[in-house]
Amino acid sequence: MTISIFHLLSLFILLLSQSFDISNSQSSPEFCNQHDKKVLLRIKNKLGNPSSLSSWDPNTDCVMWKDIQCNNEQGHLTSISFIEARDIKGPIPPFLDQLPYLTGLYFSDVPNLSGPIPSYIGRMTNLTSFFISGTNVTGPIPRFLSRLTKLNQLALSFSKFTGPIPSFLGRLKGLTFLCLASNELTGQIPTTFGQLTNLNFLRLSSNKITGPIPVFLAKLKNLNTIDFEYNSLTGPIPQYFGHMRNLTTLSLSNNLITGPIPKSFGRNNLVMIKLAHNKLTGDASFLFDEVNTAIVDVHIDNNQFKFDFSNVDLGRSLVGFNISHNMIYGSLPKRFGTLSVDSVDVRYNKLCGPIPNGRRFKRVDPVVFSHNKCLCGGPLPGCK
Ligand SMILES: *[C@@H]1O[C@H](CO)[C@@H](O)[C@H](O)[C@H]1NC(C)=O
Ligand SMILES: *[C@@H]1O[C@H](CO)[C@@H](O)[C@H](O)[C@H]1NC(C)=O
Ligand SMILES: *[C@@H]1O[C@H](CO)[C@@H](O)[C@H](O)[C@H]1NC(C)=O
Ligand SMILES: *[C@@H]1O[C@H](CO)[C@@H](O)[C@H](O)[C@H]1NC(C)=O
Ligand SMILES: *[C@@H]1O[C@H](CO)[C@@H](O)[C@H](O)[C@H]1NC(C)=O
Image 1 (cartoon, helix red, strand yellow):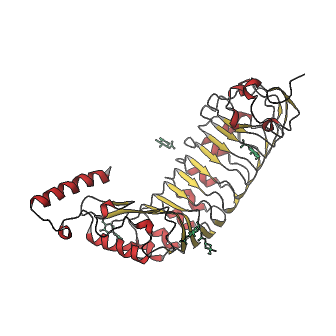
Image 2 (cartoon, protein in one colour; image 1 turned 30 degrees about the vertical axis):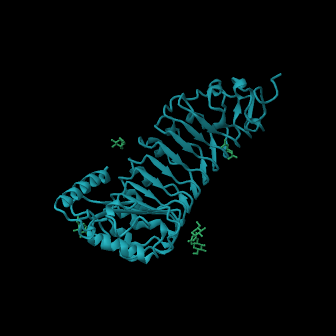
Image 3 (cartoon, helix red, strand yellow; image 1 turned 120 degrees about the vertical axis):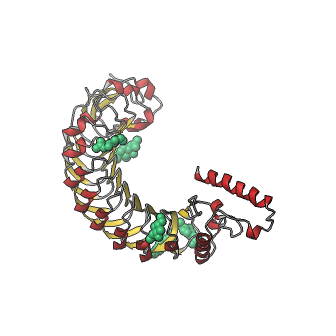
């Protein structure tokens, strides 16, 4: 959108300059701020002129360069994205702090980017979005990031960050998006996270986080996504999760969580719930029920749930579920027969009786029904 406005404006200026008969391309005016352009060219040079930055051509207006955005006053650079730049090697380049109007800085899928986050990043206090994702960047999450108080979005993910999740991140109260997934972060979720009341999205998955799911997260009423899967969280699922009105996606799979699912989950706006591979017990039938009007996908496989499935009034929005490896008994509810065949898995339970609308499932791999007490029909042998 902005780019196309720039294109139009630059065309206009080009026409203007031609009408004044300025033919020398050297002196034709550019949109891009010339100081900022020089900084980018120094960065490119420092990175060894990788081919992923081939659009950074000194003979063209940097407004046209790939994944670069400028503002419309003096053509100052506002955003730089290094995306899928596999040929960029070594540490995060210097000079980025010489771009005072920069608000967005993205490194995404730059696997050979390495070393710690340089301390000059702590001076880039105008940043609102900072992404380091899919890199080989290492080290503890540095304290100077707490100076970036204008941040709305912070991703330090799919990289090699180590050490505890620092409590100073709780000072970044403007954050709406925080992703620290897939690192080697340890320790508990800091209590200061209770201050991040603007958060919509919190993802801490695939780390080594321990301790219980903290009560102070109840203050984050704007959260729509919580993803803590693949950690070592212990203790029960807090009751208040079921009262978070904006929560649509909850993933706690692959932890060490115990106890029953709180009954508060019976009537909320969850669309997707993933609780697989924990040590949960009791009744989970109300998750599937019609009263959970928005529910689409339920994953509770590999737990110790024990309940009668026969009379569950499967929600009409439900598209799939995995309940395998539990102790669920009774029969498959009638509406099961209307679900999509490639998104259900009930193996390793104690279910019995005919598969509803079994003909629909005739071509399905019978393995998804296997290891039950006495399911029959459909892809399994006929009922007696
Ligand atoms: C960058 O990393 C990839 C692994 O993602 C590796 O295969 C490749 O050789 C590296 N490229 C360079 C130029 O070092
Ligand atoms: C932040 O941006 C303003 C312009 O909006 C600029 O004057 C100031 O120098 C910038 N600060 C830093 C630390 O870059
Ligand atoms: C990441 O860094 C480690 C050393 O810290 C190195 O062994 C590994 O090959 C690097 N990976 C990539 C994709 O560059
Ligand atoms: C939930 O989302 C709605 C709309 O997206 C928003 O207006 C509201 O402030 C959010 N927070 C709570 C606590 O409902
Ligand atoms: C359901 O869960 C089991 C156990 O966790 C897993 O092996 C299986 O692949 C899952 N089924 C589907 C359809 O994803």
